[in-house]
Length: 394
Image 1 (cartoon, rainbow, N blue to C red):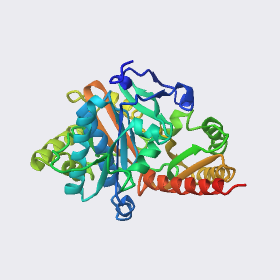
Image 2 (image 1 turned 45 degrees about the horizontal axis):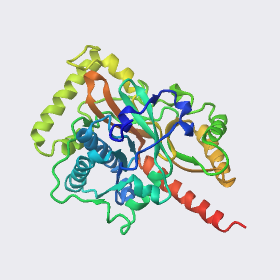
Image 3 (image 1 turned 120 degrees about the horizontal axis):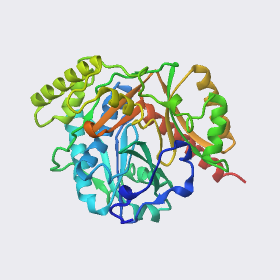
């Protein structure tokens, strides 16, 4: 396996229940880089009701880099208010330029400040972390990276430290507009059919493995999110809602068609009209086959992933939510797990469609009104609390 083609040549797995098998994760080559970005003061944007804007910018980070370096070369993790990708040294310059473009676009069009950095994997290992990954097959040709080793946490700490990030920072000076082809946000929010959309981040912190912790969670929920794919899917027919014109169309056009807004409005409006007709009739329009697309859509979402920690977006009843909170609180008190959790009434979905005819499309799912971003903040608070307790333990 060559260093440049590490991710492309990495074998994939398709049974998510095996995601906790740590021995199957492969170390990313030392000469790779972490491209990481998140929105400064995303909490204020959430408070102002702009979490869809925040999600869109986070997804734009992924779209810009993948459009620049190739979809099979750069593993990625969507984090709600930002994203992280890994690129080989050969693609570093293209990745930096794409990310710089998103930094500038977010500031100019969205009035959001995106901080970004390119950090060598070798430096993260020198800091005591690691980055190992597996490639999870969603459907033929579509993958998600599962990442362990605490390296993403270290890169996030570097990104948010004004002094530590200086050697790695990516800025927007003289950056060109990024390539955001395929990025869209046309679906209505996905309603909570059981009452609560739960954005959950959790990680083993003691002697219990992730599998053991999830078995414990399964006893409370009545199903295991690692095992039961049908109970965890978010982008199914029951959740999906489409209206014309989509409420997020202006956001999409402003971000993806900054060079020519008029052309962008015409293009996206025509695409939406054809979609509505195909959606209603079931007939194929050009490369778009609605029956095939909706089957793939239910599979090609990132509602279950590992980015140093397990991240889930679930639709739960109030009783399931109460049981989950109690179970995780007990696991935290016993030193077995760290977790962060956010609850909302609906989920948001942002799409990246590179080639609909060849079934190449990924859909990023997050809880509304803060979702994974606020769950991550709560996770970090508990992580710091547990570290203080262990520091002062006899």
